[in-house]
Length: 536
Ligand code: SIN
Image 1: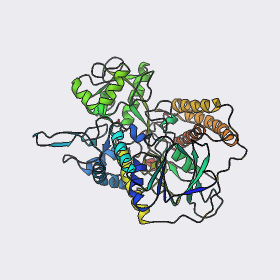
Image 2 (image 1 turned 45 degrees about the vertical axis):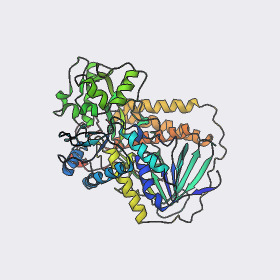
Image 3 (image 1 turned 180 degrees about the horizontal axis):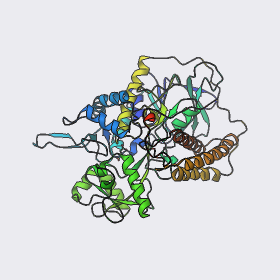
Image 4 (image 1 turned 135 degrees about the vertical axis):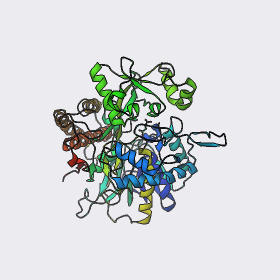
């Protein structure tokens, strides 16, 4: 209802693993609203194929997982954060299983029962990735949503789009900034409603849609990072956008991820000549960390002029491939590709945002009352390149820790009168083409100028163009009533600006950020984050 304020104890934005885990843990102590811009199952989590990395095997150790994470992170991880998250992983995984998540199992070699079937991905020295065949995220999401449905204290508000955070600073109060609530567009009524709570959690995922080609669902428009930045929070390391090496290259299907587990189970990358090229780039070949594999593919495509490379697992028995990757096998078959008989055409695509809203390992941001958990947050776990399957782990552990933090430190709703949303003289937009044109232009320019390989000139060109587009979007925002398309456009423009600004701040190449003008890492930048904060 426009005009009235809806009061909750906890407001959670986003319905993936981070938001749902947090909500479940705090629900016994207060009323929770989960605000989600589409349906409850529309989350990045639901699309995760490969799995969740954690130490559950006797042949593995916390130390080895820590070492692999630090190596992939190329010198930029925060080691204490890495140790905390990895050490707490096994306990959180146990809870997920007790909640009903079913991970794939295999027969024990002696035939006496079953054990978790662990797979391997790039950068992992051991098999440690728990999975539910090739649809791990969907299985986790199912179990969490089932648990949410049993919780009377949780209200899930679908088709509700968070417009902006409401903070004391925005309302003109002096003193430390505090988050008070959010303005939310109810997509059914078209009205912007006011929600208040002493605890607000961003669990909105990442921003893959800022690039033309991505493995992410349409919802991944960086809403949380953009809102937090507008509210004055610190944002860091946005230059580290992870490109997944193997997204299907097909005219009818542009976002189908081919999980890294295909390479983990023996898949080879082949060039146009049908030969493996990864051994020329790295001794770990197809299982080198993602930044190395994605750059190698980019370089092969540029060298040969090919539109794609090939992922070949035809040397494995068909029964093995179909039982490990049933979802991918079926989806490819519908597109006319039989992965048991022919190589799969693949290209790198934007996949994961390693930077984000600056938090500690408990999700605490620098705005009181505001927390961020999961892909939206920057804890320091991923450094300059995320180790595969560490993201669901981070979301799970940090959501638990954030819940514990807020329950141990309860704070009442500040006594501040929140004004209702003002739409001024805004009227309905007459030319929606402006929104779709600007949306396409941002995604194309980010792909062309701010992709896998960057230069200062391309970054400057992108910066200038994004500034112009932002002026236009801002004008449109004030003149017309808000719609979810316009809000997403405003958010991807903000996130594009942040990626470019962070990239320009880093005078070196490290992990996922590769700039031809500074092709080497600079030791002076090894533990330095590129931190940006909105001025004024
Ligand atoms: C994959 O299945 O390859 C994706 C896993 C991840 O991004 O962590």
